[in-house]
Length: 102
Image (cartoon, rainbow, N blue to C red):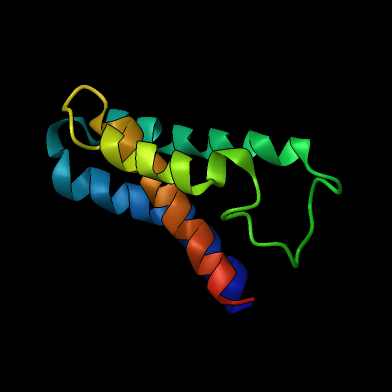
């Protein structure tokens, strides 16, 4: 019960918290851009089976690789890509929380 709550809470509530606290004037836009980070889960479609509850996505799927994660961190630096980078990093953090329960 705690695992899905923590996982999906990080996916949806953490970006909302960051948007409201750090991007007050445009928090709705910031939240939606950061939620777009969920799209990296499309790489799960490359796996067989697509969903495995006992599989940690970090290091397994291409968009969850160490190289990709480093790229997401660098996206947080320029102001023009910061929201996209934050959304992707928050997504990775949520997946790491999920992996910690395994």
